[in-house]
Structure formats: C-alpha cells, structure tokens
Length: 207
Image: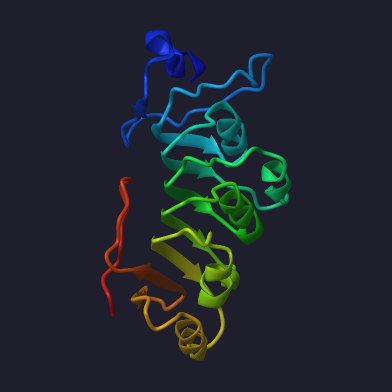
C-alpha cells in the first residue's frame, strides 16, 4: 500500500480502489511513521478496523476518506488506538462501512474525535448495540462542524416491537429517519433519506 501512496514521486493525490478489489492490510514496520501528505482523497477496502489508526498516521492531509472495513472487533476496546493521534484537520468527507458485525460505539466516537472539521459523515453497519440506533446517543458523538449525516444501520434485537417506537422518538424531528423490518422481525433497518454511499449495499423492502 505504501508503494502506491509513494508512486509518481509522491505527487499522487487521489487513490481509489474498486468495490470488488481485495481487502488491503497495512503491516507495522520501520517505515510506519513516514507520512504521505500528498494523498488528499482515498477510497479503500481494509482488512480490519485495527488498520484505520495506522492509515490516519500515514495520511495526515486527506480531504475525503471512504473506507470499507472487512473485520471489526468483538472483544477489545479499540478506542484507545485512536486516542493519541494527530487530528485530521483537512478531512471534510468521511464514509465508513463495516462488513462484519459491529458493537463499537466508543470506537466510532473516538474515530470522529480525530475529525474536528468534518462536514459529511456516512456510515453503514450491522449491530445489536442500541447506542448506535438511539438518536440522542448517536448525535452526541457527532462533530459540531457536521452539515450532512447519512447512515444505514441493521439493528438486531430480541425485545418487543414497542422498542421501535422508543428508538424512533429518540431522533430529532428535523432528521428524516426511515425503518423497515425483515421477514422474521428480528432485524430493524434504520436509514436516512437520501441514502449516499460509494460502496455496494443492499436494502430490504419496507414492510
């Protein structure tokens, strides 16, 4: 990956990997701290969430970053990995998609803390963590600079349907949040309109 960032004598500004490209890893080696300030836009498929803080260290000046993460973590709190990083002060557009099941409210909050001037945030995930579908909790971790917020969340739950009304009421009136249930009523799909994402995705039909 470093060879790609350094190509064309470090004059490359935009790197975009196709949706069907292989997921990429970023090994920890002696060159880890050599940054690539030339990269301003990046669309990439990552092997795991642990790679993201290394990417933040390598790319200090991105303006647009779209990342699809193949593997998340179910056991460790990864928020500490983002605690001592330099903020991405030029980043205004960030998209984050988790292919794996994600229960990382604190980690996502730590990631957003590194983006003080973010204007557009879009994310897509599967979860059973109510904090990630509760409007009051989710909005509390967004940067004050944000102008556009879009999401697609597949929320797995086991309680009565009355929980749906509780979650919908947690969102402010000015945000248009839609939902649908899957066939066995075990997964609640929350999404904003319009839905914007550069990676492939699938939405089930509204009931």
